[in-house]
Image 1 (cartoon, rainbow, N blue to C red):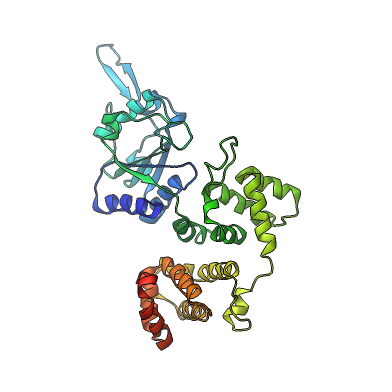
Image 2: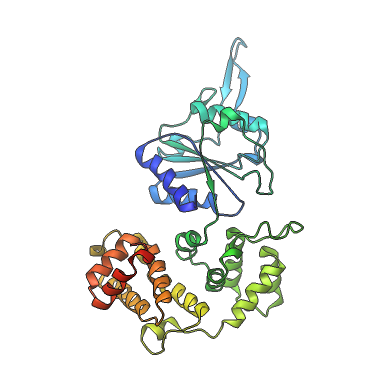
Length: 359
């Protein structure tokens, strides 16, 4: 499954109050931890992130000590676990790196996952447990979960999906346009872990985010420091391809010129993709609106202007590509806008290409 589907599975449990633990397994750097924090922000849950590979069994299971007259034992509960008074009633306990931690730490987490308690400590009622880890073939530290522990999880395998990363993360969180345009042209470059087994450097969504941060500080690709920093994040081969692509496509159509009708639509697929990315970025605000009635006059005008501009592409394949990307921002709302605009030429195109557009 992709990250969006994984997020939906977790949100299903939270919305319906199902406190079964969920485990997500996927390659490093694909955004697993980040999606949990996004869920917390969206639903109002505090995320308590425990990196199990860096912890001991005592930090999870707590410490046993004798009482005053040494006739019984008592239990010191770990401070890192959710505390309702400190953290509130709504928490997500994120057990990250669960497939990279020693067996004894996994065993310590077992009772917490199985019985929602450890020693005298009990997880608050409003706490949901999410585990994250890597798969056995992800070329990282991997320690197989014991059968009884794995059986206590609802387990999902997460794959890299460029479209989901682009629409759910890159555009909303402002990934630099150079990175977004290059990866739209070459989506296989989003994750290249298997590309060079002799190198420790490979591209991931996480490392492209770091490249974006660098470019926001200095986008001069002739600066040796910038070039070296990009290479150190995604590898030399990928960095050279990226820099070559950006320099070859620096003479692009300005989105404002195109929207205003001052220039015609480009015919080159690369330039169309880059223009569509810029147009989709303009309507990213639609992602957070449930109904067209909640749009301001300015927001509605902007959205309708983008939709009409997509229809001005001279090649049907480019129109379909643009509509698909805009639909991905907020499918239900964009469909509603199509109907309310009631443009005969747009309606005709949608009817003729409904299957290709997935509507």
